[in-house]
Each structure stands twice: as C-alpha cells, then as structure tokens.
Length: 547
Image (cartoon, rainbow, N blue to C red; front, side):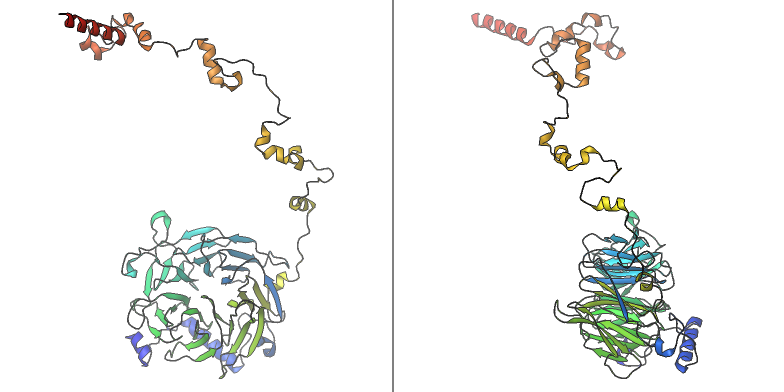
C-alpha cells in the first residue's frame, strides 16, 4: 500500500496533484531563483539585500494574558490578532483601532474552564475557529460572538468513523485555505475530522462532521492526534501523532482510513507539537518533544531534508513558522521559569549546515511558544509563557500592522471619563448628583439593619387593631373583606347548622337538577348531631341491660 511503501523505503506515492495554480507558483519561484523576477509576495519593492533581512529591528508588546499563550492567529489581511492560552481566555486585537498601548478590544472565554489550544481565521477573515481542551470546537464571528458549536461523538462506539464528532479533547484546528465553509480538527481520539459548516446538524443545532481520517501506529492501533495542518492548496493535510509519526492524507478517491505517506519515526516516539507547510507547498516542517525541528520534502518522505536540534519544547503547541518566500524557518525555544532566555532561532533551509543563521533573545526568563510569520505584513508574532505577545517588525521591509499603532497617541481623556473612573465622589462644578449616592448615605441605604431606624421614613401610628392584630399589618384585601362582612367572624360558627338553614329551601327541588331526581325523598344531611346519636345509643344499651 502507499503508506507501507513510504515506510519500507520504496518509491513514495506523489500525493500532490499539481494544477494550474501550482505550476504558476513553481514558475514564479524559478524566476526568483534566477534573479530575473520581481519582488516576492508580501514584501515592499526594494533591493535584494534589504529584502533578505529579517524583520526584527523593532518590537512592540501586546499585553493582556496572565498565563502562557498557546494559540495565535492573524487574519489573512493582517488587521486583526487573536490569542488564547492557559488562562482559558481568548483576546482580540485590532491594529486599526489600537493606540501605542496595544490593548485588546475584546476578551472572551470560548469554553468555560478549558484552555485554548488552537485558533484559525477563515480565508475571508470574517470568522475564526477555536479549539479548547473540550470536545466541542466552536466557530466565532470576527467580533467574538459564538456562531456554531460542533457536536460531541459517542464515546461508546468502537469505530471512530461512525461517531459524529470528537470523543476526546481537541488538540488542533485550522481553516481550509480556500473554502470558507470547511474546517479541519484533530483530537486525542486518534482522528482528523473535516467539518462542513453548511452540513447537517444534530440536537441543539450542533454541527456533525463530514469526514474522518484515522491515525494508527505501526501495529495498527489507534494513536492520538496532536496536531494538524492544511497544505496551501488543500490538496492534502497532515496529522501529527502522539507516537512521533507524521501522516499525510490526500483528498482524493483513496479511502481516508489509510494515509498516503507516513513518516513513522519522525520524532522518535515523542509527541508532535506542530506542523507547518511551506507557502510554496513543497516542504513540511514538523516539531516534536524530542527538541528537534525537521524539514520534509513531500516528494521524498523516506528521510528528513533537514534536522535542527537544540530547540527545547516544554509546551504541547510549540511550532515552527515559515518566511513568506519559503526559504527561512523560525522557531522559539523553551526555558525553565526564571532560568535563561527564550530564543528565536532562524535557519536558512537552502544552506547545508544545521546551525541557525540568526539567534535573537526574545523573552528573558520565559519561553517562546508559538510563532507566526505573516506573509502580507512581513512581521513576526511570538507568544511567551508569561502571557505577553511580542510583535517584531522592520519599518523598511514591513508594512501596516504594528506600523499603524507604534506612533499612534491614545485618545484624550474626557473629564466625564475621569469622574466615572475616579473613586472620589466630589462632583464637578455644574454637575448634578443624587444625594443618596454620596458616601454619607451609602451605609444607611444598603444596610438591612439600619432600614428600621431610617430617620427619613415617617412613622405611622396604627392604633388598636382587630383580634389582637395591629391595623398596619393587615393587607388591603383583608381590610376590604372585613368592611363588607362587618365584624362577624366565622371561626366560632357551626358549619352543620349553617347548612341546615337552606334545607327548607331545597325541598321543592327548585335548586336541584335532574341528576338528583332518583334521590328525591331521601335526606341528604343527617337529622341528628353526633352527640344526639351517642346519647340515643347509650339509652338503648341501658334499656337492654335492664331487661
């Protein structure tokens, strides 16, 4: 089979089906290599020397998170950033609305009590998918409003292909690079699932998955999926496994239960933490807990094209990112808390050596977890274990993004805003204040004990009441009934005697219907009281004893 051929070292199956778009991209790359082409995609027009530099001369910080940030996403246009982490929060930043303080404009909790593991924007940037440690990935609008929730699968079914959703915590999620209604997710249940956002739904409108791809180890046993990624043209997708393997699935006629290619010992039994396809679609970068980053040629998957060691990873979502020209790879390193500095390492993939071309100390005493290199902005966004996002750029070769906010002054404070934010209750000249909102009345208003002795409340002399009750304690309805009935009370009345008053009126049958005609002539009520019957019975017993 194709997967077995890839493992045995035979000629691997070329699962990438080149179309017109791929041919055009390859031709453009060849022109760039020969030095005859123009500027690369995402870079301003400038010389080759300036173009080859990394955008790391300037830096801004995006604050807000209090714990490590595990997920990052930028929309395709580069105008909005989303981050999520172990604080169970997702923060949204907008370059068009931020000032130089770089504060988030919205803070949401995608799933209560669960950390955020993956975030990804749609191709149009109008929505994003959020994957937490729960089994329910969700779709949100650009503004952070929840739109769709994915269904949970039946964990009691042995075959995962028959379940409608994930049954174990989700580990990754990414949006289709071209289709606006397709999402790919991975989970610890050993499956990659694609979801059609316009497809069928289950109870409560929860979305049902459209296809399932299974990850298995060398013995054919299901193994947990730890990462997933789409190829830039969506010809195939890749899944990282807990056993250290990387498996490729194509979206053709072949059964999705069997991968087209398998890099079985990609990371030597350690979990795969990140997968990234190069923008030209020829290479795949994988990162694992074995502290290595490996580059794979998708046409020859028998052995890695490059292996970079010494890239420490302490987090389950650590990754590596490609430059827009697919020639440079960057990854962050992890350190123990307060020991060492988190680094950004840059490697030239075309170079034969494995030493990094550039190393930058980015986070003193903290780890660098996720890295994103945006192709249009030509800026590098990195997350750290302290919750701070570091955005690197170079004014000469970068555009928009941080350049829009670095020099923007914050809005002038309004005197009314200062008053609302201040704890001082002293009013401004000409303003109107509610007297009861002042501190001197605060305790008197909200203390339950002081309500009885409130000097502002008038005292009412209720006077003597009826039957030992005060007049002020009676409700209006009780007062009205007593006024209509007078001072009579039914507490001491004999109910039988009151009913017998109407016995004479009912003898003529005027008040009885036809239903009681067969009972005419019979007494419906006892003619003697219980006491009278008891006395009569005792008299009869005495007469019997005498005889």
